[in-house]
Image (cartoon, rainbow, N blue to C red):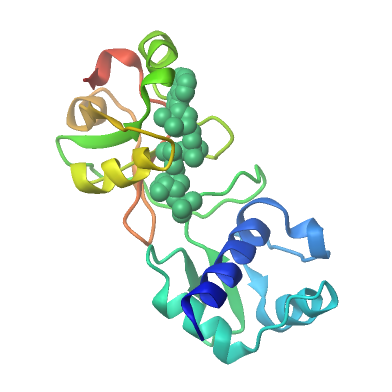
Length: 181
Ligand code: HQG
């Protein structure tokens, strides 16, 4: 498959598995899993044709490891990034590193200084392990501003942190007092 085709399928999967399974009448279970055969069949009805082999290639080559299969490859889900409120990925709270990073853009800064980092439309605030990754995340919206989150101090204060299967750090809210610019 060429890169364009892979990206197009990946974007379609993100839309279905994180945000709008209803678009094709797909069912996700409470942990976010969709049946692979059902996904392929219902996508086809909407004019999106891909085989199980193509799906495997998309999952394996995805730049951010956005999707996972279950053990016998009958189910697939997105590793993070959901806006669907009903999906519970059953992530376990773990100890974060001393600092995590968040890439944003200047126009959001006044609001972030007042309210801290909020999850906005997603289930969690997304944080990066390193500045390079945060820079990529921020660059999606313009010239990035990189914030340092004192995650170690937040952990001590009782805030919970989770790490998705593809390495993204997640938390519910970062109060402004734990953010260093
Ligand atoms: C901002 C992509 C105003 C926040 C990326 C961000 C990531 C506030 C935007 C993943 C705010 C939300 C997540 C506040 C936060 N006032 N703005 N109080 N608090 N914001 O897309 O972190 O390709 O939901 O700074 O690579 O940008 O989808 O979050 O700019 O890993 O796999 O509100 O999405 O991954 O935007 O990105 P998002 P994000 P995928």
